[in-house]
Image 1: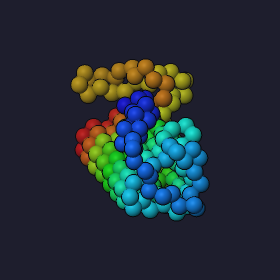
Image 2: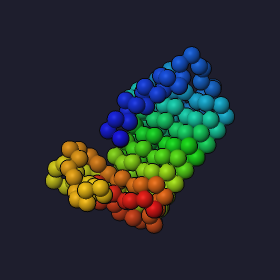
Image 3: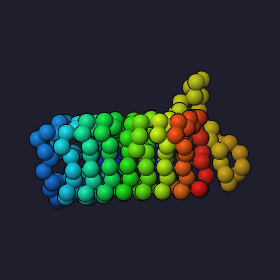
Image 4: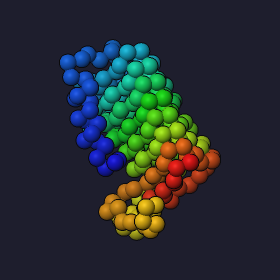
Length: 192
């Protein structure tokens, strides 16, 4: 999913924004390639960086981007979501509705009602709905020997080769981790 997220975000951006005009972006927000940035109504953003040079940025209705956040597209943020102060987001990343991110997030899909609200790294990952990532938790997304990442396949009850050099955390719906959790490359966490 995260491997194809960039293309999907670009296609969705064009579809969702066609014939529409973005809400005004405050002058205190530093924008690059402003034509590829779209804010829905009542977005709360005052000071930050929105860089759409590498991909479009879409921020949903009533979302909040707190001070000092740096977002590089492609990026989509669902309604009522929050990007916390000082967060670094690298595209392609999707933040579902009513979700929250902080720290450093790279090439990740976080579904609705998720919270990764504190420092820590999350990259090349897919997080299901209603998940919580504890403060200062991190994941590895690259093996030390640069080999393809293998992940656990619950259906076949064995590891399978992803064919990917970069693969982080796959976390199913309603799962949580405590503070300072360290996820190995290609970790898979099942439902609940």
